[in-house]
Length: 140
Image (cartoon, rainbow, N blue to C red):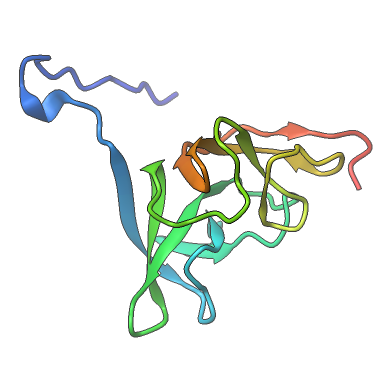
């Protein structure tokens, strides 16, 4: 069994403050676009795949905020206030992954329910995807 040991940092150190935004670089599929919701590949290290439904085996981890010139490397924001505009998103609403891989304000009645974040302002999203999901019954 793997034992996880928390890293303890002195609270008075400025570095001890939690990050306001987490962005990482991953390999991605050709055709991945800014705004795509992605999950980690189960077979290829450091690669993300576009989440085409909430029935995926892997939970979504974040949103693509930049695709590099090569088209096979992208920046994925996995936490924090996102600078992208999410048209039609009202303030103070929970945001979920839909059954077709898009973000929605209503949990879907089929597949898995994954909370992805919450709107903090009009058309603005605070990304904080839950990596546990609830399976709806019947699973269609």
